Amino acid sequence: MPTTTPAIDVAALTKTYRSRHRTVRALDGLDLRADAGTVLGLLGPNGAGKSTTVRILATLALPDPPAHGDRPGARGGTARVAGFDVVREAASVRRRIGYVSQRPVTRAMDTSRENLELAGRLHGLGHREARARAAELLDVFGLAGSADRLVRTYSGGMARKLDVAVGLMHSPAVLFLDEPTTGLDPEARAELWAELSSLAQASGMTVLLTTHYLDEADRLADQVVIIDHGRAVTSGTPDQLKDQLHGDGLTVDLASAEAATAAARIAADVAGLREITVDGSRLRARATAGASVIPTLLGVLDAAGLPVLAAGIARPSLDDVYLHHTGHAFDAGNGQARQEVAA
Amino acid sequence: MSALTHTAMLTARAQRSTMRVPVFAVMQIVQPLIWLLLFGQLFTSVVEIPGFATPGTTYLEFITPGVVMMTAMFGAAWAGTGIVEDSERGVMDHLLASPASRVAIQVSSLVWYSVVAAAQALVVLAVAWLRGARFDVAGIPVMLLGVVLLTCVFAAMSNAVALLTRQQQALIGISQGLTIPLMFLSSAVMDTRLSAGWVEAAARFNPFDWAVVAGRQALSATPDWGLVWGRLALLAALAVVMTALATSAFRAYRRAA
Image (cartoon, rainbow over all chains, first blue to last red; front, side, top):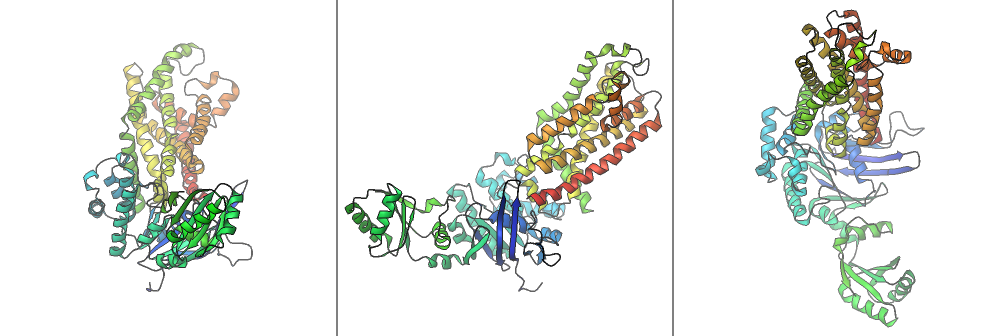
C-alpha cells in the first residue's frame, strides 16, 4: 500500500434512518480524510452524525443503498478504511481496526484479563501472544493490580481504560474511539488523555476520535472536523479552528426576549463588540478583550434600565466555533468552558 | 479453523457467565426437578385412564422424557438474553466489528446451552430412577441427541428474536408465548390420544413433541426406531434452518444499525 493512501477516506457518505413515522438523514454527504499515523477528532453535538460515521467505518452499519440512476454497486458515497472498502471488503477492514463504542465493550461478569485475552484471540493472536499483550496493556493502563477482578467492580474510569485497551489488543492500524471520555470525572479524563496521547505518538496508528469536548480534541487531535446535520462544517488543526474566532465570547442574560433585543441595539454602539446575536433572552457577542468590555456593556445596560441576570466571558469553545459556522447554538454538555459571573 | 477456535473461545465465555452466577446454575438443576416432582404428584392416577400410554408404564416413567424436553426447550428459549445483554453493552458491536466468525457466535451459544441441557437431562433421569422409574439405558444417548437438537432449534430461535428485537421484555414475551402453548400441545405430560383430536393433530407438527416422542420411544423397552429417527431427522433439519436464520439475523442487525 503506497504511503499516500489515507488511513480513512470518506467521500459523499449518506445514511438515512427510516421508521414508519419519520425519516432522519443522519449523514448528508460527509467527506473525511485522515492520513496514516494521525489523530482525527470528529466534533459535533449529539445527533450530528458522529457515531453513525464511526459505525459505518467499523462495518457495523451500512451506508444508504444506491439511488436510482447511480452506477451499479455505488452506495450513498464511499468509505475506505486502511485502504479497504467498508461495504465490499468488510472482512479486511475488520482485521485492521479496533473499535471502542460509546458503551462498554467488555463483559461485566468477566475479569479484565479474560476480556483482553478473548479480544486478542478473536483477532487471531495465539494463546501466548494474547497473554503477553494483555499483561502489557494492563500495565500501560495501570490496571495490572486489578487484572483478575470482574469488570463490574471497576470504577467508570478504570472500565473506560479497559475498553481502550481491548481496542488496542491486536495493535490495529486504525482505532475508533467513540466518545472515550464522556461520563468520566475530570481526573479520570485527564489520565486517559495522557495515556491516549502517548500511545498515539508511539504506535504510529491512525485514531479517529469522536467527542463533544473541544479541549479533548485540542489535547489529542492533529486534525479536527466539526460535523453538524451529517455534514462537515469546518476542518483544520485545533489552533486553526480557534484562530478563526477572534477573541472571547460574551453572554448576557436578560429578563426577557424583548429586553435582550433592546440590549442588542444598545450593545451595537459599544466599542469592541462584534457579532452581536440574540438567542431567546440571552445576548451573545464577541470581543478581543472581553474582560475590559464587559463592565462598559453592563454600565450602559444599567443606564438604559435593563436589569442583567447573569453575564459571562468564555474562551472560544466548540460551542462558539459551532455557532460561528452554523448560526445556532447547541447543548452538548460543553458548558463548563463558560465561567458564569453573577451580575 | 478460525471458526472452530472462535467457537471454543466463545463457548468458554458462555460457560464462565453461567458459572459466575451460582444461583442461576443451581436453579438450572433444581427447576427440572420441580417440574418432575410437581407434575409427577399432580397427575399420578392418569395412567389408570383406559388407553393411556403403554400398560405397565408408571406416570413417572411417562413424564420423565417429557420433563427432560421441557427443561431443554425452556432453557434454550433464554439463550437470546445473552445476546440482548451484549447488545445493550457495546460487546456485540465489538464482536461484530472484529473478525469473529458470525457462525461461531451462534454455534457457541448452541453448544453451551446443549451441554447444560444434557447435564440437566441426566440429573432428571437420575432422580426419576431414584424414585422408582426404570428405563432402557441403551436409549439414553439417543434421548440426549434429541435434547441437543431441540436445544439448538429453540436457542437459535431465541438468538434470532434477540438480534431482531434487542429487548429483553420482547424476547421473553415471544419465547414464553411460543414455548408454553407448544408444551401443552404435546404429549409431554399427557397422552395426546386422550386429548381433543385437534391437539393430537397439532402435536404432530410440534417440534417439541417430536423431541418428546423420540425421547420416550428411545427410553422404552421396545422402541419404534423408525419413529425415533424420523422425529430426530425432522428436528435436525429444523435446527439447521433455525441456525441459518439466526446467523442471517446478524445482517438485519447491521442494516438496522
